[in-house]
Image (cartoon, rainbow, N blue to C red; front, side, top):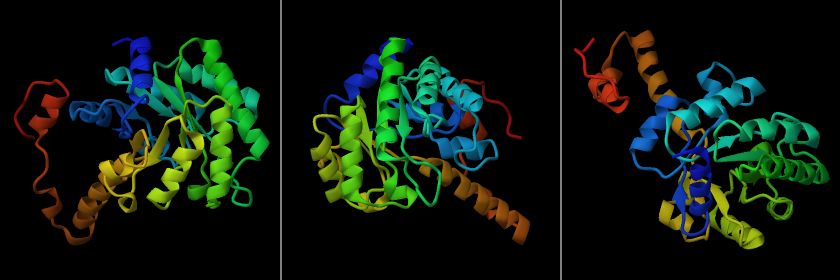
Length: 276
């Protein structure tokens, strides 16, 4: 499937129903998720940053663009890029960076309003709206139809105000976002309120244990469910537990019951080989 076809397929996924879009952090995890039958994938800025030994938001523009291209090239599915805040503050720079991201082969990308400043965790409202406008203009100028998701980060950035989140997402919808996303919502009632506020635009929900199942989230009217960096943290949790056991106890119980090397090689298209 070429990039244009993937973009078209990604738009169709948002037209009805609800789908899960899990978040790989490298080409290998992307290919494993594709094999499990998910219809689309989204990158995770945190998962990618940890994989290169950085904290979240620690990747450079060049690294992020190469990452998007690498994930998109590894699979035949639509891939949406977690582009943080566009790795820029001013709208002109956001537009320039979005144009570069839209050329990497992704089917979608997201722009968030987190400022990274603890004293003022979200960009000013007017600036935030103009940043979404700038991303929209850049995508339109590219002719790619890459799907634009606008994110309001208050619930994970230290400003958990539902009314302000609704105000921002509604404004981002008016500014041209194709999909709206507020990670960290505390419950399904808040999801429903956002779905109502931005209708008929689709809403992405960050899955957490407190939000329940896919079916329960879908019943709110949300169209898309992602897991952010949770799959990457799942992998790191198992890695750290096994490594700590070795370092602290000198035992290897954590290495029992693992997927085999041959099974992994089969997934990645390499012939099986003797265990080593």
